[in-house]
Amino acid sequence: MSGLIERYIDRLPFEIGDPIISLGEGTTPLIYACEISERVGARVWLKLEGLNPTGSFKDRGMTCAVSAAVRDGSEAVICASTGNTAASAAAYAARARITCAVIVPEGRIAQGKLAQSLIHGARVIELDGNFDDALRLVRELCESSPIALVNSVNPFRLEGQKTAAFEVHEQLPELAALSIPVGNAGNISAWWKGFSELGVKPRLFGFQAEGAAPLVLGHTVENPETIATAIRIGNPARRDEALVALDESNGLIRTVSDDQILEAYRLLAKTEGVFCEPASAASVAGLLVHGADGVEDVVCVLTGNGLKDPDTALAQGGEMVKCADDLAALEQAVLS
Ligand SMILES: *Cc1c(COP(=O)(O)O)cnc(C)c1O
Image (tube, rainbow, N blue to C red; front, side, top):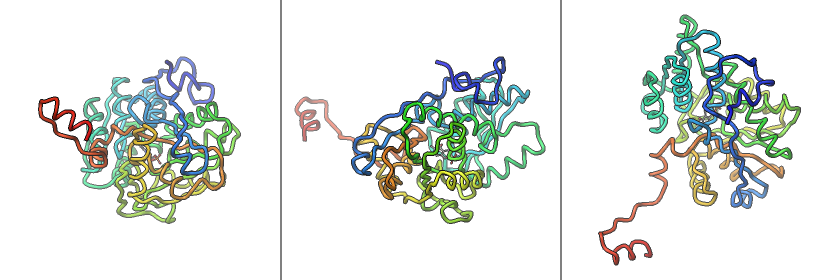
C-alpha cells in the first residue's frame, strides 16, 4: 500500500521523483461508535489514527517532514516530544538512515513511546523540564546548527497531517463536526488546513485537559498537569492558527477532567472494542460531557494507540484471576 505522499502528491509540496520516506502511513479506518452515539445523542464516528505505522497520527506529518529533510540534504533530525513525535521521528529517521535525537520530559513519557524511540536507535535525551522547556531549547539549538527540526512548527508536518481531513471527507462527506484533543495545537490547525483546501466547513470541537488548558484559559500554563501526557502542554506552538481555525469553523474549545478522560478511555475499550491512549479519549470525553451542540454526524479523532501506554491500561483495567493447575479450580476461576 502506498503512503500518503504518493496518494496526495498533487496536494502536497512534493514532486514526482523526490525522495519519499514512507512506512505506508494514512488510510486509517473510520468506524461507527454505537454506544457512544447513543449516549451523546448524535452519530459518532471514530477515526483510528492509532493504526498508523508507529501508532499515532504523527506519522502523517513525519513522512513529509523527514522526506523534505532528506531532499534538503539534512543528515539529522531532532524534536522535542511528549512521546509520539519522538517515536515517529525515530522510525522515519531509521528508514531514511539518518540520525535522530529526541528530547523528552523526564519521567513523563509513556513506556511504549520510549521503547519505540530507543529500539529505532534515536538518541533519547531526558530533559529535567517539561515539553514546553524542551521545545524552547530545541528551537534555539536548531537556529545555530544544521539539524532539521521536525516538531509541528515545521510546516511539512501540518502538510502531512492535513491529509486526515481529505480521508474523512472521502469516508464521510456529511461530516458536521470534528472532535479532537488539543496539545501543541498542530493537529487541529492541520485538519482545518485540509478542510479549507477542500472548501468544506465542519465545526471543530477542541478539547484540552483541565490541568493543561492554555487555549481555554487564554493564557500560558506554567506547570501543565494531566494523566494524558500527549497533551500535557502549557504553551502551544500553534496557538494562533488553532484560534483562527476555531473561529472560522464556528468551533468550540473546552476542558475535560482527567477522571472524565479515563471514563471515556474505559468506555471506548469496553463497549466499542477500541483501545486508544488517554489523550485520544479526550475527544470522546468532550462529547460525553459537553454534548455535540446539535450536530448530527461527528468524528472523534483517536490520535494514538492504547498500547503506547500500558501502565495506564493496567491501572484502569481489571485484575487477573489466579488459578491452580487443576480443572475444578479453572472452572471456578472462569465461571465465578
Ligand atoms: C501529539 C498528540 C496529540 C496532540 O496533538 P497536537 O498537535 O500537539 O495538538 C494528541 N494525542 C496524541 C496521542 C498525540 O500524540
